[in-house]
Amino acid sequence: MSTSTDVLLCGFWRHALSEVAGGLDVLPETVEPDESRVSGRSAPAVVTVVPADLLLDGLTDERPLREVGLHRDDRDERGVGDLVARQIEQADAVLLTGELDDEWETGQLRVLLRRLAPWAGHLRPGDALTSVRGRAEPVAAATRGLRGHAVGVHEPVPDHGVSACIFRARRPFHPVRLHDALDRVTEHVLRSRGYFWLASRPDLIMTWESAGGLTLGPHSGWLAGLPDEHWAEVDAERRLAAALDWDPYYDDRHHQLSFTGIDLDPVRIHRTLTRCLLTDDELSRGEQHWRQLPDPFRRAYPASAATEV
Image: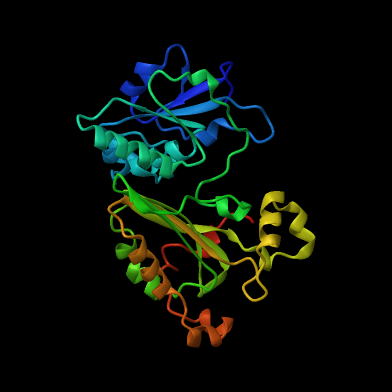
């Protein structure tokens, strides 16, 4: 996508965009900011505009885009919540427009946006949009950790009721226990993202995203299973991150999951996910045993759907 302007406006709500456009180019309402970026080339900055009175409704909207007539084609499986979350976290800057009647609630939304996109600038009405600088290369929020970037922030102490936490671990998840715990893990969570691995499929990176609904899926293989002669084909940041964090037993396999929400309990999330990890006894039985574990994810998320490393 090419443009002559240095700043593009992005957002799901057209009326909010029109209020601040001021002659700037506006992306179509279902476009994600990363689609305007081309690796290795200069790219315009993308500012996502979010109206205060619609943010929470948007993040929790489970309707598929096809239900509201905004899907691109039959392959577009995104929901409204997915789109709103990605437009926020992929932005170079986020602009919250409008004020709620309660000043404390408006402050809560500002904290929430900073937790959702800690790497973005955060603007107020009247701030100069032209001062925002864009980045040329997309870095997907769910898999940032594979390249050594944080997938979120660990701020478990509530600020205006908003908490955020990160779960990290090395040993794999037991597929049945994780499957049974998904509803408990996502309770009170407005946005979660990251990646993990299952004992039943130790060669595969699985991505995790929730906003409205939860979406899991195969992403790629771990570098541990990649022949040495193909390492040069892998992104340099990912190679470096893997080398710095390489484990003598697990290699580059690990989990990194970020959770953000209002009134969520970070301790409960951590304890629930920890109970889903393999026990010492299960771990000691080895990889061939793990591969035989019942896997309720296998039918919905076949490994053949994964992209290249």
